[in-house]
Image (cartoon, rainbow, N blue to C red; front, side):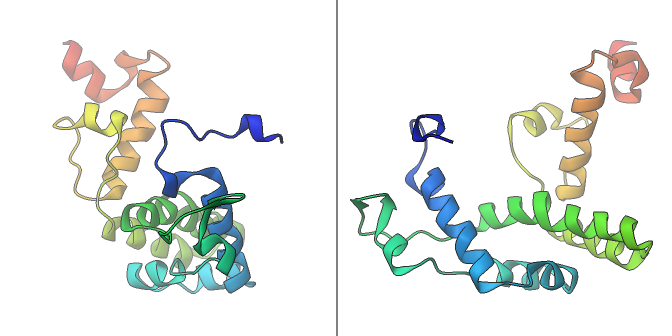
Amino acid sequence: MTRVNWKFSKMRIPNFPTVRLAQLSSFFAHHPSFLSEILAIENVKHAYDLLEVTTSKYWQKHFDFGKETTKSFSFGTYSKQILIINVFAPVLAAFARYSANDLYMDKAVHLLEQIPAEVNTVTKQWNGLVPSNSSVDSQGALQLHNEYCLKKKCLSCSIGLSILT
């Protein structure tokens, strides 16, 4: 992949691909047995703690190759929530299916129930139509959007049907 393919414009520096790659490599360096550690998660605080990693000294002073900064970047609360929603919970759910052990599915659901609902353009559209008390609800809204709205299957969706009739 060439640098031209990386997106830097219209993006905050902590979200630059170079910063995120440095954070990802730091996560793997701090957690060489990351799968075992994800499977051992007991609560959302434990999941947050796994994401408390520091980058190498170089990336503590740089945001891009050769470009220095005075700020140090780490995962913020919202970034941690997104990673738990989109990485940790799905890994637990997949392992539950693979191992036929419902304990891991319960852990995944429990994690999602403890995290506030994700806020993005899709979930904002569903605001008021679907309760959004936790990330379980926002993930449900995203699934409904992907399976019914994008495929124009409004009449197959109970929410779409109630709006149209």
